Image 1 (cartoon, rainbow, N blue to C red):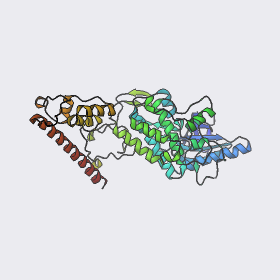
Image 2 (image 1 turned 60 degrees about the vertical axis):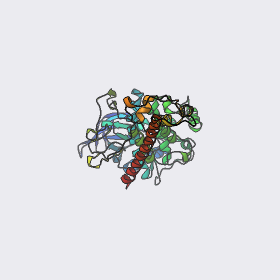
Image 3 (image 1 turned 90 degrees about the horizontal axis):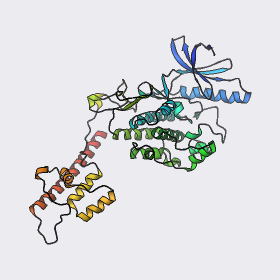
Image 4 (image 1 turned 30 degrees about the vertical axis):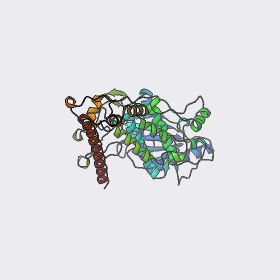
Amino acid sequence: MIRQLGRYEVIGEIGQGAMGVVYRVKDPLIDRIVAIKTINLNLAEDEKEEYEGRFYQEAKAAGRLSHPNIVTIFDVGKSGDVAYIAMEFLEGRELRDILNDQKHLPIEQILDLAAQIARGLAYAHEHDVVHRDIKPSNIMVVRDGHVKITDFGIARMSSAAVRTQTGMVLGSPKYMSPEQVLGKVIDQRSDVFSLGVTLYEMLTGQVPFAGENVNAIMYQTLNVIPAPPSMLNPDVPDMLNFIVAKALAKDLNDRYQNAREFANDLRGCRDTMPRSKARVDLVGGHRNEAVQLSEEKHGSQRAGIDRSGTDHLGVDTDESKVVATMGLSSVFDSTNATMRLAAMTASIEEVEALAKTLQIPRPSLNEINKAAFIPKESAPQLPLQHKVQPGQQASQTERTVGNNGMLIVIFIVLIVVTVIVALVVFKM
């Protein structure tokens, strides 16, 4: 094993990648432990030129990026036939290893990880860097579930001296975008697709495009629409099905146009889900129901808050900036509520037709009374099929039900108007 790389003292080997060995070293100038990625340049002249060029391109690409979700580059150098890049030493695990151990992570935790990756990519894209090889083995998860994107070795920069030859395919087949498979010029939307593949695997335990060989995988990438993740994991909400489908759209115009939009939708999906205490200790690799970071001061469970007062998705959690939100009662905010209101105002035939259309059961009288806020002991006990016949005068009881139905409709309208006004004021 190499003992010295430039001024760095090699402590041990971390692992081996496609381009070389990664070492744990000590920088004696500042007494800091760092990681060094190397590439052996003892190759044929044509191979040496290409590999060395790509290697230094990684340093230039990643070195100009300073973001919490991207590995930090400290130095680049050459020692004999070995070129190296010194970067921050990450104590954690590759997402690849985590997925191998944990086939199904909690959905909320998956959304947190994926949104962090998307935010890191958005920053890189805004600085004209396309990663080109997003996959679980290039994602590191460190303490408290924080994500770091690594290995910009085949990134394309607008100012890069090393250009990909026409038709040359770089990347990992299972995670490549359709345009990357075809050898076309790619942009940030290719990284969005690759992250979509990674997200699909995180949700289901399997990649959306697979085959016995590279050609079979590429054929599926170009032609097959994968099943919604919820078909393989019933915990996946419908909203997340749509997010994955948009990220994996084969037509560039149908896909997320940038990673920031992707991150925002992932965060929005997470915010619609009920908070859960169940978390997986990703670095340790075991389920721990007690591992959670709560916002007890704000009355909610929000996973992924770090000490800086900002969560992993970039949401400011400072108490002075928390805005109170208005929530609607669950008796209104559902299709069941629509059904209950219909039962209060429509005929039995109309109610049956609506129930069939919405594919939900017809509400009971108790549910109708609950929707109308009528105390159970004083609620009129009318059958659902009761209907005033033509020419028949409505009884006092029927008029009471009709009035209550009108009041509930007015109450709903007032709530909706209040929410809209609140949103407008908040945006201002």
